[in-house]
Image (cartoon, rainbow, N blue to C red; front, side):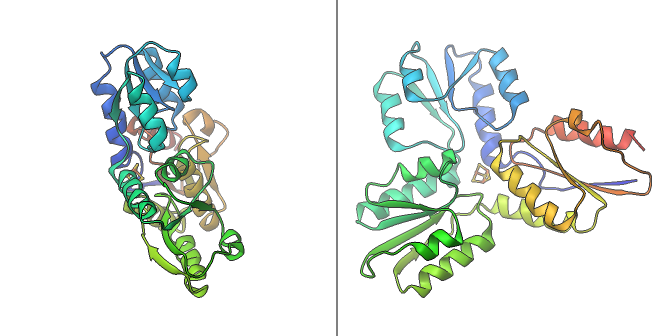
Length: 281
Ligand code: F3S
C-alpha cells in the first residue's frame, strides 16, 4: 500500500495563528471565543475543558462577566466589534490578515459610495463579517445564476470581492458575467492562495489514487469543498472527521491512498489517520 499525504493538508496560516492566540491567553479568565475558534469539535472541546467559553452571539456575551474575547480567523462585522469593545470586554483580534484586508477594501470602497458585491456563501460567518464592513449597498452573490439575474444601474460603480475560500474558476466565471454587462467594476481577487494551493493539490492527488480521504469537520466549508473537488476525480473519496469514521472502510495491500485535510484539521488528527491506514495493511 502506498499512502500519499498532501503537503498542504491541515492548518493554514490564519487558523494556526487564531488557535495559537487562544493557547497564548489560556490563563486569562474569563476567556471567550466569538464562535468556535475552528470548525473542529475535538479542539473546541479540549479548549472548553481548559475553561475557554464559546459565545455564539452578542446578547449571550453581554450577559457574561467581562473578560477577553478572541475573534476567530473568519472575522466579524464592524458593529459587533464595536459592541464588544464598547461594553467593557477586551478584544484579541485573530481575524486572518487576508480577511482583514477584505474588510479594509470593502470599507474604503463603500465610503466612496461604490456598491459592494461579495461572491461567497451568504450564511458563512466570514461573508457575513465582510458585509458588515460596508457602509453602502452590499450584495452577496452565491452562484452564476445570481450573477446573471442581478440588474444594477450601468452608471453605478461596483467593487467585487470574494470569500477567501471561493473556487477560483467560479470567481472568474462570475467576473466575466459582470464584465459582459458593461458595469464599471473594480475587481479584487481576494481568494486566499493557501486555499487555491490546497484545492489544486487535492485535485491532482485524487486523480491518481484508488481511495482519497479528506479529513475535517463536517461543518467546515473548506473541507466540504475539498471533498467535492476530490469526489469529482475519485469516486472512492471519503470525508472523515476522525479515525472512528474509518471503521467500516477496508484498505487493500495494492491500493494507493491519498490523504488531504481542511484548514482547521489539527496535525495530530491527520497523523492518527495516517497511522491507522498504514496499520491496516
Ligand atoms: Fe486566512 Fe487563507 Fe486560512 S484567508 S484563515 S490563511 S484559508
